[in-house]
Image 1: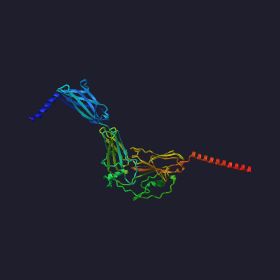
Image 2 (image 1 turned 60 degrees about the vertical axis):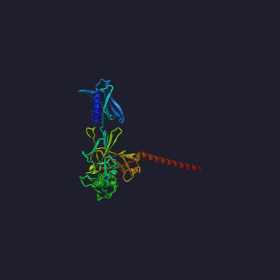
Image 3 (image 1 turned 90 degrees about the horizontal axis):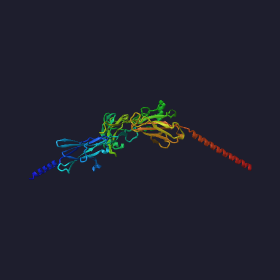
Image 4 (image 1 turned 135 degrees about the vertical axis):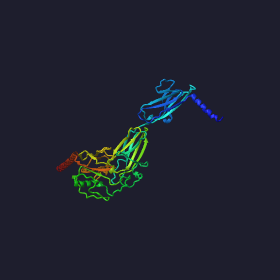
Length: 486
């Protein structure tokens, strides 16, 4: 008797199901949809009963609320434009579709299809079933750019330094895949989640070691030379070479004053002769260390959600810079994303400054004028005439302080307000440097007399002489009157 009870219950449930009819609801799956495309949601359901209603909902507010987007009521509608039905034996197969034109980010989310049929046993009773689907809207990245970390940065002649390229990708959803190439070849990177954003702390993570020769991965081993900074002797060396060869000197190359065993030997400086100083003297500095030709590239990847729901990705490539090899190297950042038919790309060519062209305004400065010396011809980018990363410009006055008393000034422009006659013949040096190299340009300031100031001084002297003559005349008249009275 006890064994028959479960069988009776199952038989009763089957009879109720046959009496009530059956209803199955399935929504066709959808791949991710690119923003701006038109999508059609399809709800398929099968039943042997009579249709009562179809309702489409969009789940909003994190699932706490539902927004009705479509309703079909069989009692009041005879239009079957949104449905298709086919008779298969005694079953009815329906398909209800909802079209969403030009989907946007806010259309992303959960959608539900609710179907109701009349109970076969009782026309007043409705049997309900539903299906759901998540619509995923993907967004291609809007922008991609490559910048140098900690830029502008100085150039070190005696010690190698680490360099970081940052690829910034914004506006994508989901986050894209980012990778780097050098001269068109994919760079094999070492993942590092421990890299510090500070370049100063990076050497602790990289684990510096001596290079074992060409073709083997390794980091640099630097030995700073015990030579004094060449900045104080650049002008004197330029003058010396000009007198010997009659052309601008290229500093930092083999020639007079070469390095021997870590010491710098300079020839005696001749007496400067201003007649042979050209208006512009350009010199370049080159590194003085040996390092591996196959460095390790370290890769770091960060991402964060923007206010509009898209992602911002920052991919960082860090290695020990070798200016001899990395100068003129083409680095590219490429992005793969399911919403893109082909990868996005941004590229830069590393380049050392080649000598800034300086312009002076006014071209013929007079005493009391405000003089502007500006760097011309430097742009950021990847073409042959552009410099990347951004150079650091430093102004100094050879043999003295700047007009405002400072030793140096940073920026693309040097302003000398109300120049005095004492600045005539002064030589100003503009140093342009980035991690790949350094170059100097010297220009001489010629200050002419100002006729207006000269006339003003002459008028003042004439007036003083006039007042002095008037005073002498008054004294003579007073003495004459005194003698007559006596």
